[in-house]
Length: 308
Image (cartoon, rainbow, N blue to C red):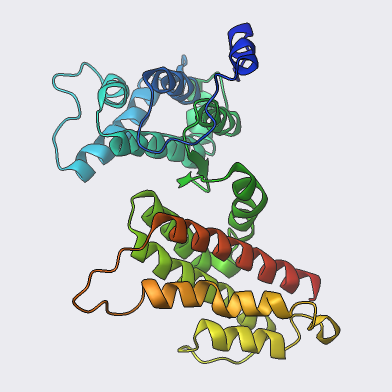
């Protein structure tokens, strides 16, 4: 059905009554209700030939959540699986568990409902998977909630510009089989960041960065050691002409950034023993490293594509 730019919304914008910073630890009830509408429209209702098909879909979601939470039911004495899942989402006080419901439902919509021809034949739906995800992300933005559903996961967003211009292109690039390892590590870094596991985020940032360079080396037949660090891999990429030699002076600052950016931040704060003093990694440093990783990966892959 999409998002309507209602008169009341336009008036709120005119008065400046819109979120100007992202929120990460709450889901307003209005937003939850809107998301339930999207889920219902995307899951659909049973048609003439699909008696029980939709309820079976909700059962899959319900059973997965119950298993992961170690419980037998999400909601006491619920009359159906759909009511169980949706009422749990509407009433759950732990916002991270509420996000769990969003992620697993939209993953199911995108990976199962959108490709299962039997499901599509047996049900009636008001919205397809692409439009459902677009509306979800629009609703997040509308309420100033700092998450977006990308690559079948909820990704934390700190800057809309950085997310749209850097993070989304990187996720698109890394989807291919060539960069499968780098993609998994980059998504895992986001997952750590979302849950406040800052040191783990830094570690996976570096892993993703290194895996990207190893994938480029593999595709071009460049030799490297399995134990090579980020600095060694960067040296190989430059030595092999990933960047044209006549541009070396112009890209000296880029090379310096790649060599001393992600690896150094991670090495000094995330990858070594901290002794008797507990080292607290500030969130702004982790956010910078995550964005720096995305920018560096995007730069390397685009250079590789341009110079193949």
